[in-house]
Image (cartoon, rainbow, N blue to C red; front, side, top):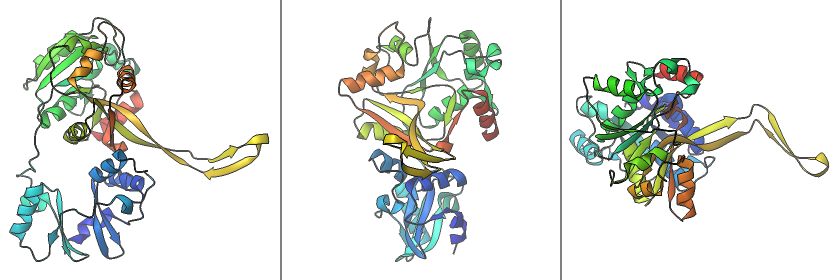
Length: 351
C-alpha cells in the first residue's frame, strides 16, 4: 500500500479550516487527507476551503463541518484502467482507493499518467489589463534605472511571469497601462523571442489604480482581468472566473487570507478600567486585497474619464448601486509581493 506518501498530509476532522490552510502552505500541497484514527473520512482540498469561506464559514470552524462527503473515489474492486478513466473523467489530481472506510491506496495524476500527459483543464480567453504605469518608488534605487514591471524575479521580469500565468489559462490579449519609463517597457517586450499580443495605452497623468481603464471604453466587451504588476499569485484564475460567473458578480476581488498573531496577552477592560477578559496571544485573520480583479465590461463606463480614480472608489460605487462585489480567497503563501525591498528579497528566494 502506498499510503506512506501521504503521511505528512493527514489531518483530523477537528482540525480548523485555518489550520488546514496553514498546513497546505507549509507542505506546499493543496490536498489533505482526513482521518479519525484509522478511519478514512475523505480528502480536503484548497478548493473546499475557498468554497467554505465564500459561503461564510468561520476559519475557526472544524474541517468536519465543511468536508464534502460526496466526492468520487475508487473502489478497491475496480481495475487500474477503470481508475484511470475515472480520474480522466473528473480531471482529478488524486484518486483515493477505498474499501468501505479503509483507505487502501492513493493514486496521484503523475503516478498513473506521468508528466507527459497533463490534466487538461478548460482554457478561458479573457482580456487582461495590466496596470504598469506606477513609478515603484518603494523599490528605489533600482526603479530609478528600470521600471518596476521589468524588475527581475528569477530568469524573467515580474511582468513576464504575470503575463505567462494568464497565457497559461488561455488569455491572449493584453492591454497595458503605461506611463513611467514606458518606452523602455515597450522596447524590452518587443525584443523578446516570445511576442505577447499587447496594446499599450498611455496614462498621461496619474489616474489612480483603475482610472486609466476609462481609456478602454468600447474596446472590451467581455469580462476581463485587471492585475497590478508587483505581485505574483499561484492561484489558477480559472477557478476565480468560475466563481465570478456562478455568483453573478459585477466585480470579483482576489483576496489573500492573512493571519496576524499578537505575541502578547491582550486584555479587554471596561468601566473604571476593570479587566473584563484576557486573551493569550490571540490570532486575527483578515481578507487582504491582492491587486487582481475580474470586472464586467459595463464597469468601464462607471470609471470617470480623465479623473483620479482608485479601484476602491469603483468598489464603493458598485456597492452603492446594489451591485455585487465578490471576494475569492487564496492562501497566504500562494501570494508573493515585491512592493517593498524586504518582500522583493523574499520573492527572489522563492523564484
